[in-house]
Image (cartoon, rainbow, N blue to C red):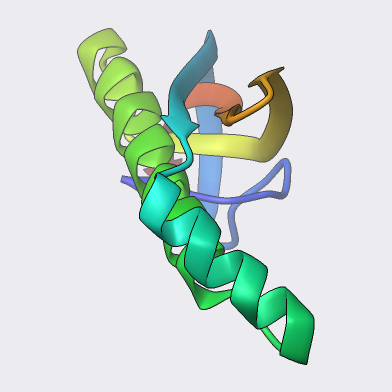
Length: 106
């Protein structure tokens, strides 16, 4: 599966657009990670606990988007974007979305 943030793919021609596909996940913070993050906030630097949490969320959202595209018969997803939103005080949603397409070689 080709995944790109652009509207076209070098060496490929889009022959059919299958529509919007998306994948999302909602992740809640873990009290242990919050404590560690709060301590790190005192001394500064990257909050690696949250970096890892969001990296996992991105991968899960992408996997779900790809699964939806494959179920439609797509072999690529173009114009991929990510969006985040707070669901509640300790949880955030990460959404991946794009356009599922069928491509062929030029």
